[in-house]
Length: 135
Image (cartoon, rainbow, N blue to C red; front, side):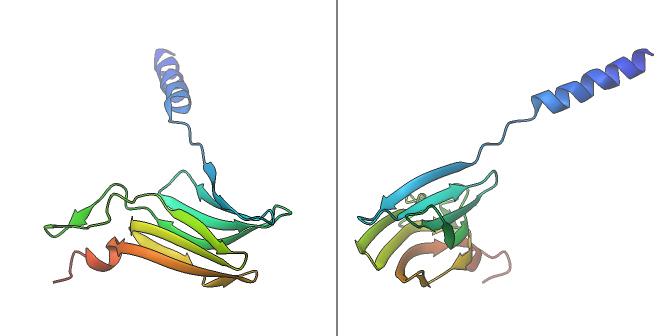
């Protein structure tokens, strides 16, 4: 019986002691017509940049894995490595700019969505330059 109590106590701690996961939704830029560009960070290192219509409909534009704080590899430190968070600006109602200094990888990158052209300024993509088997 004592073994059962210890196991139950441990199971209770496992359930209660696991870190809580909270996703983060943050508006990065808004347009004059009520549209917005927002960053959604889930409980992993994956981040999605969404275009949000004036009615609230989200359309993913750019999805990437963050660098996880890595700023270099193979003896190199990348010049824009401190730009870990994306910045977004609206140039006009049909053009936005997304800039980020370093990412681990890119999963989705749309150049046009809902009549809005997207221009990217992405620094280093670690999965391209830091492969273990690359020269």
